[in-house]
Length: 345
Image 1 (cartoon, rainbow, N blue to C red):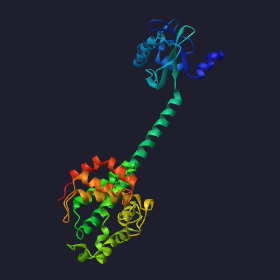
Image 2 (cartoon, rainbow, N blue to C red):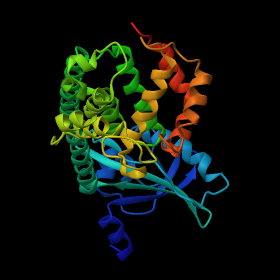
Image 3 (spheres, helix red, strand yellow):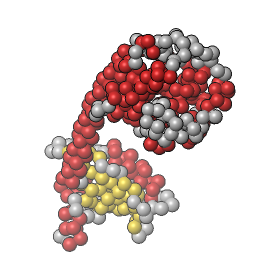
Image 4 (spheres, rainbow, N blue to C red):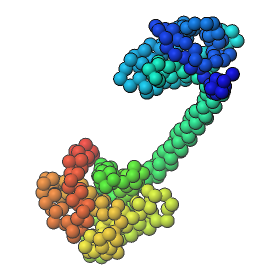
C-alpha cells in the first residue's frame, strides 16, 4: 500500500472522480465501510453511487450544479448524514464534499467515525446544560415574582391602612405609581427599579397614619402649629419605612421623607437641596403636584391641564428638579393617558 493510500485509509475517507453521468472512479482504497454501503466498490470500472443512499443522491444532484458553477474550486459540503450497512446493520456517520481540482470533478466521502459521536455527545451535553439553565432561570424568575408579589401585597395593605386616615382617593394613589413608573422608564431605569417606584410612590403620604384626626381631618385652614404638625408626616413616613433590606421599601422611605423637599432647599422636613434629595422623591414631587392640580378636591376645582402646566412651570428650578420636570413635559402625552384612564371614584 502506498503512503498516499495509507494516509487516506487512516483518514477514513474515500476519494472518487466523476467520470460521466452518475459514474465515478474510485481513487483511493475503498475500505470496509464503503464496500458495505456500495458493494460494487471492489469491481473494476466506474462505480454508480445512486440508489443505496437517498441523501447522497440529493447531494450529487446539487454537486452537479456546483461542478459547473462559477466557483467549482470551492468545496460544497453535505453536512453529517447517517447510513446503515445492509450487511452488518451498523450505522455510519458520513459527510460528502464536492469540488474541482485540476479540471477533475472530485467527490470525497468521509466516515466521521468516533469524532461524530464525540461531537454529538458534546452537543447533547451543551443542550442539556442549556435546558438546565433555562429551568433554573424559570425557577429563579418564578421565585423572584413570588417575592415581588409579596412585596406588592405588603405595600398594598400599608396603603390601604393609610387610606382609612387620609382622604386621598384610591385612584390618585394608583395614578401616582403609574406616573412615577413612566418617569423611571423614560430615565432608562431597569425593570426592577421601575417596578419598585411603581409600588413605592403610592406610599408617599403613609406617614399621615401618625397624624391626629383633629389635624388630618380638620375641614378648615390649619393653624401654624397644626400645619407644623402636619408636615411631620414626611419624617414619620420615612421612619416607618426605614431599616428594610427590601429595595422597594427603601425607595418608599426615601419618597415618604423627601417628596416635600424642594430643589432650591426651601422644602421640608430637612431642607435638602438639589441632588441631595433622592431622585425617586424628586419624581414623586412632580407627579403628585400634577395629579393634585388636574383633579377636583374638596378645597378646589380641577385645573385645565394647560393651566396646571403653566403653574408647574413656575415651580421649575424652585420646587422641581428642572431636568426631571423637562422630562415630565416630554412625556406629558403618556401622563395624560394615565390621568384619563384612571378616574376618581
